[in-house]
Figure (cartoon, rainbow, N blue to C red):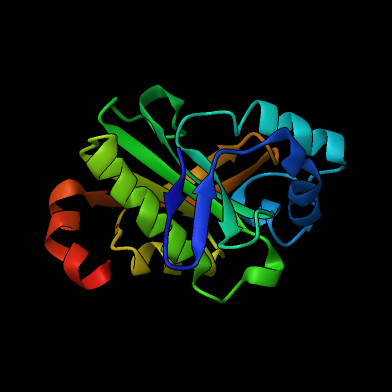
Length: 184
């Protein structure tokens, strides 16, 4: 499955993306704020591609005309999510390499995954979270129509082995239908 936007192609991850993934995921400004450790090697990045990213609905973010993976966006449903949600609900996750921050690329990618989630996967509710201090992620969610739902205090984050405050946002199919003409 490949999704296309004005500036992006969202495609399945390939093992040949390991070098590009390592290039951006090894930056300490990317993973820890999102709840995962920076990658330590190309081999680790390859393992992530083969396991974590080898899931339906998880896409490499690439610029049109350049097949290099510069980030990741995806939706996980039901029990595959980090949230306790039903099978007709999904969790959106995303990140992008530092050189691409501030260009509106991730909101563009997230909007397309939202469309895919509601129109193709037929989900009814989407969830998205961000940790305290990750204002960039909060802004992505706001730009894409998510609204604050609740806060989880003392949330254990296994990949970083620490405890954080997580803010959770939600977007329903009805909310998306009502706003897609103006936001999308």
